[in-house]
Amino acid sequence: MTEWIVKTFIKNHDKVTEPTVRTAYGKLASTVGIFCNVLLFAGKLLAGLITGSIAIMADAVNNLSDASGNIVSLAGFKLAAKAPDQKHPYGYARYEYLAGLTVSAMILAIGFSLCKESVIKIYAPAEILFSWLSMGILASSIAVKLWMSHFNKVLGDKINSDTLKATAADSRNDVISTGAVLVSSLIGHYTGIARIDGIMGLLVAIFIIYSGFNLVRETMSPLLGESPDPELVTMIEKKVMSYPGVLGIHDLMVHDYGPGHKFASLHLEMPAENDAMASHDLIDNIENDFLKNDKLLVSIHFDPIITADSRVSETRMKIAAGVHDLDSRLSIHDLRMVVGPTHTNVLFDLAFPADFRSDIPTLVRAVEKIVTDIDSKYIPKVKAEQSFVTK
Image (cartoon, rainbow, N blue to C red; front, side, top):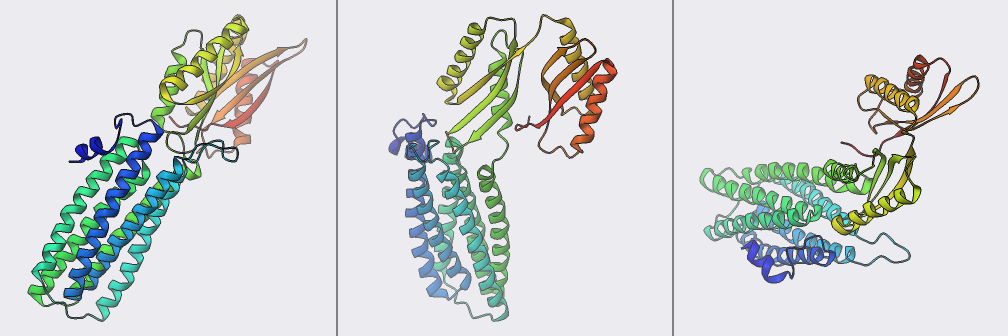
């Protein structure tokens, strides 16, 4: 059914990297969510009024809140589709992240509200009227929410949307919470334990709060500037290194301005002896390759590496090996040597990962010793810098 809906309402549904198609997916998911949640709210409100159950009424309000979350998601996708302008040249795609964060915060708010009402119900239980009509409404709600969870997950995976994935998780939570309400109603009916309504509501609330915190953390991560996907990093490195004459890359940075709006920059090492125009032409070809085939705007800086001088090459390899022995996560680049009458300056950058917790000045001194141990006439000039990618 999900595939039929997608094919029916989304033109060019298979071109998920296109901004207009991505927006269409978001609008479809939000519209379906609004319709289903309003319908479920009306049904559960009726069931709650019939039975007087706080758990059922809370579940009804939860669905109304879900509909509000779908409206937020719809607004987020629409705003994210706005074209770049002078004030925001990188576009507005991060609105989608903000929409996902808002939905996650609403899930948390629902959890705390339900927790409060459930505690009150535990200490002051009220008689619950049993109705098979209400049980049927709750059972139907579970079936609908199971489908909605699957629907949003499929669409979220297709366009890699944290907002739709959060919505799918919320629907899953609703299946659990409504199931718990249904079970508690049956237990209360057959055992006469009035507090079971509040106890079950409290357990559901705790689960929703736990899920909400996880979703908030996940949706905030790209806004805070998370490390790029290792698969993306590997893809960039493999593509660049596949071009003839490329010796290596470093200082790779990926900037995320929202789904479909990623930018990257890197330093590319090539032989210094090559013709400068030929090297520049190759860099242009690499940048155009990323833009055409990966929809990724990449800016490349050329770093010339002396390959004709065996002394420089040998020194580079020895220092790199020594640095690797200190810590396998360390690396060097941009090494050059300035030879003088009495000494030789050896200049290079030392890259360390973002989670490196060792004392940097102490590390630099250890690296400087590696250089002077190679030759006492070498004077190391080490620049320590953080790496911004994780592999």
